[in-house]
Image (cartoon, rainbow, N blue to C red; front, side):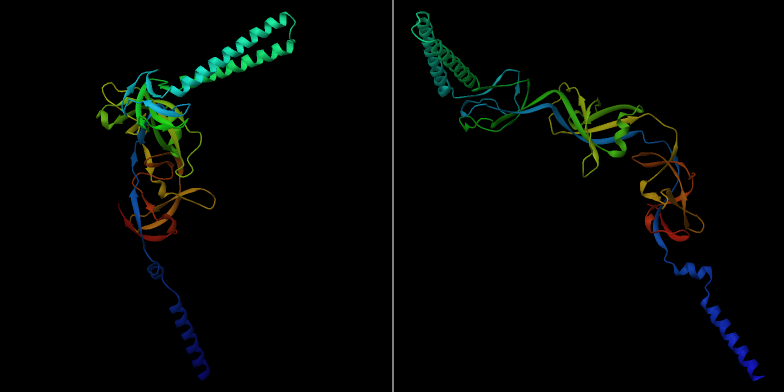
Length: 351
């Protein structure tokens, strides 16, 4: 009798202990921390129709002009900002030394010519060998080459504009001594203006696609006027840091408005309208171990999230287009997606 009472007591204690070790689902859920997360309601909208980029104006050509010979600047009257025509004199060196060198070369050539003529007459009389005449011919050719170099050096004391343009920078002043190849001025060709922008990788292909309706630029110096652009060139490799491509557009000069290199420009690419669709932020996407794309969908009543596979379309400035997997009105998590787990309750935050 006492043994049976003891057994009953032990079984009762085991049952009590087992009951204490079990937790209800509500108790387990209460033990898990409720994470705050940004959410948004899925809506349908048209694909973005405009892409805007900030660019810089550049000249069609820019060149730093320099003398091919060294010397002292004797004439340098143009100032920065001047407009020059093709062939116009920009600066000149003191030609005195170069003139003397040319005169010396002319004298040496004349002497060589005279010597050759004398030896040719002697050769006719068989007074000298033909080898001496050949030597005189070689000396004359050498003196002619030296004269040509002296004449070129004298001509190089005058620096002229290779094209019509805008004198952007003046590096030196008059009467300064310079070395050959030292920059004197920077000349910009403004007969055509270039605008350079950096295009992110995800938008680079869109600039050359058929759904681009127009591309134009606006400049602060020209108010609200829009200027059509023509694609001129683009970099074949992305920049290492920003993963963007440098794209260059061309535009005609603006009559009555001075547009100079370095000015800011806004480039707007307008795309043809597309059918409405669902667009979500790229930050809302995660990938499964199998490589599928998922989003966290929240139950509006319980605030519990679960992952759902989606099919992606094109990417744009507003995010990525969802072709399949979401419907209008559903609530998805847009930030903090890497820290969630299936069946977790969140504290939704609406931006």
